[in-house]
Amino acid sequence: MFQFNYVKAKSLSDAQALIAANPDAKLLSGGMTLIPTLKQRLAQPSHLVDIGGLSELRGIEVKDGQLVIGAATRHYEVASSAVVKKALPALASLAYLIGDPQVRNRGTLGGSIANNDPAADYPAAVLALDATIVTNKREIAAGNFFQGMFATALEEGEIVVRVRFNIPPRAAYEKFAHPASGYAMAGVFVADGAAGLRVAVTGAASGVFRWSEAEQALTKKLSPEVLEGLPLDLTNMNEDIHATREYRANLARVMTKRALVKMLAGK
Image: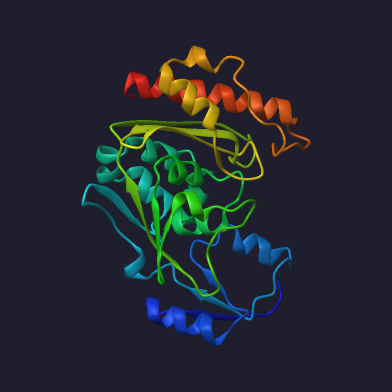
């Protein structure tokens, strides 16, 4: 690691001030991405501003018909929350599938979406549920938040405070996990709510995306069979030593079918 200064923020406003005063500072919450990056000397921040313990960024509640989760809430808290299991069980199931116990006990919701790893799980739920990302400066609709691989609409000094999820009558998530990392080689969140049926895919491409062709087909007939032969653009599909573009596209189709079957079964 390069040398840096560690500062534990006392409040959200304190964190804002520290970031503003130190342009090369980085925010630290769970550290599941940042710490390995520092260990590999791929980043050289002047300060690490720890916001993981701020009460302003924690908490889970249902408010005004939405599930509201603080940005520093850890994955295991979402997975085990009675509130989440009752209001949005698909999200609890997703959180349980993230990484391994060590990652789930340290990683946070805000850190996951702010990093926007193309294989992360939460972005699929955020996009499929048309969630709202609340920062220290504004509110950002999910459709405007994710902007490609590791890129978001967040500006300099902007901190994710909480996420407001819409609660559909039914939803489900399925993924094919990489056997070593637990990251999604293809993960699909299906939600059937007031905004209609939405299908969000993560892991398969350079960033999370909605599979519009599947949404249109399933709106006409809500059955897994309509997905057979349905086109899935290969242009932005990931291809590496683990899978070809075609294989990942097929994984996305299979995971969509499985998520749909789970949703229809009410599981």
